[in-house]
Amino acid sequence: MDSRLYFVLGDLGSNILVGLFVGWLCSLIVATGWNMAFTMILTMIIGMVIGTVLWLPLGILFGAMEVMLPVMFSGMLSGMVVGMWATMAPLEIYQAATAGSVCGLVSIVIVWVMNNSARGINYCEGES
Amino acid sequence: MDTQTQAKWDKAAPNFDVMAGKGAEKRWRPFKEELFSQMDGKILFLALGTGLDIETFPSGKTITAIDISPRMLEVAEPRIASYPGELSARVMDVHDLEFADNSFDQIFTSCTFCSVPDPIKGLRSLRRVLKPGGQLFMFEHTGSSYYPFKPMMDLMTQLTRKIGPDMNRPTVDNVRAAGFQLREVNNLFLDVVKTIKADNPAQ
Image (cartoon, rainbow over all chains, first blue to last red; front, side, top):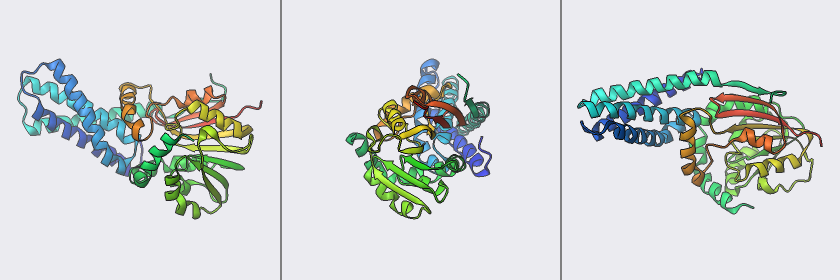
C-alpha cells in the first residue's frame, strides 16, 4: 500500500464510499424471494459498473489503477453480499449501506495485502 | 502515420490533464523521478503527451521526445519551454520512427505501450534506433495475472481502447518478444503498474 496519508485515506474513503453506495442501490433493486444465484450475478455486475463510474471522479483525486481496481472489486463484493442478503430478508437502508461499507473496507484491505506480496522487484537479469 | 490512433489522442488532449494530471501523477511521481534520474547520454522519450512527465526529468539533459498527437504536444508546449535542458518534441508514430539506426543511448517510455496498436512492432522500432548495448526504461501499466483483476481488466479494455489505453497488455512479454534483454521488472502496484528495464543486445 501507498504509505502517504493522503492516499491511505483516499483509498479507504473511496472504497467505503463505493461499497456504501452499491449496497444502498442493491437494497433498492432486489426484492425478497428473488433467485439467489441470479441476483448474485446481477448485483456483482451492477456493483462493478457503479464502481467503474465512481472511479472517474475518485481517480482524478487519488490515482488511476490504484483506485480503479479496488473500487471495481469493492463494488462487485458489496453488490454480491448485499444482493444475496436482500433475497433472504427485507433490508433497511442503513443495514444495506453498513454492509456495503464493510465490504468496501474488506476489499481495500485485501488489495493492500495482495499488493504487499506482489510489489517489488520480481525479475532480475539472469532469471528465466 | 496511424491516423486513427492520432485522432483518438487528439480528441483526448483538451481534457487529458484533468483525468491524469492530479491524483495519478501525484501517486506516480516518486517512482517516475527515480526511473528518470537514470537519464544519461542521447535520450529518446515517448510518448510525451501533454508533458506531465517533464517536471520529473532531471535538469540539463538532451532529450528528443515524440508523440503521435499534435494536439497533445500543443498542450505540452509551455512545459517543454520551461524544461531546464535541451528538450525537443516532434509528432511521430513509434511504428515508423524517422530517426537513423543506432541514434540513441537510452529510450524512456511512460504509460506508452498500453496504447501503441502493434506493441511488438513498436518495440522493434525502438530497438532499431537504440544503440547496441543501449538501455530501455519503461514506466507502464499492464494486465494482471491476479483474480478477479484479470477478467475485470479484460472487460474494461473493451471499453477503454475506444477512447484511450488498453488495460490488459502483456508488456513484459512484448519487450522480450521484440528482442530486448530484460534486466529488471519492479512491480509498483500489484503486478499492474511497474517499471521495466531492458537492454538492446549487441548484434
